Image (cartoon, rainbow, N blue to C red):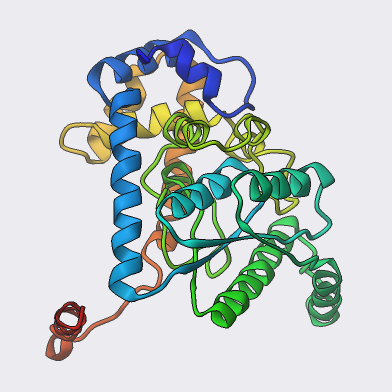
Length: 317
């Protein structure tokens, strides 16, 4: 398949409204430059990820992987990759006041991908924790904090199941979410992250459709599943395609600095797009602490300890 703007637009996640021609022109440039890989290159990426997952399984002697199935494309793709790599893949639905269609999509992906099925309705536990936290914190009821609680309750449940099975928990976040800070610390990041380098606007949906993820899941409007908004585009202030194009423009600036960033912003004459570029920058800047968590403080006397421990790890494999 020859990669075209129309191919990407057909697969890119919904939300954000009509896309401006400026983004289509930038997308075409990105396709020509190879920044958006064509189908042949994407197939090589799939093979590489599957091989790496197989090697991890064999190196560490672990064969069970537990994945929370939200009903979105990221969790379904993550499960499909582990399944392809020969892991015993456990798909888990974890509804908390969830929209039924989201839970249904999660279950459909479990069935279609032939995962080991599990379901835990955590609504009662969530309500109990809300009441508990509200007793001593009158500010608790904000949507973001409730969303973080949902994510952490789910991760507690996934890790408990993984411990029972002697396995690991799969991370389902992609590169766009990583840059946007679209995850909860100690909430929805697990042990092994096969898609964290993949863009949401093309690589994730292409790979998912290639590996047999149900079309309803591939085409579903992205949502955090935490009840914070109607969709990710509402929180981003733009679609994932717009976010990715602006993000990659920033990442590929020569001599990346505050000055080159500002020069890039100044080249955008459309005020709406310039505002969106500002939103991308704001999200990256305000969430950088999450990408360096935990932040390890070292003293010159002990600075070689981490490296030495890493060497010991490697020698034991």
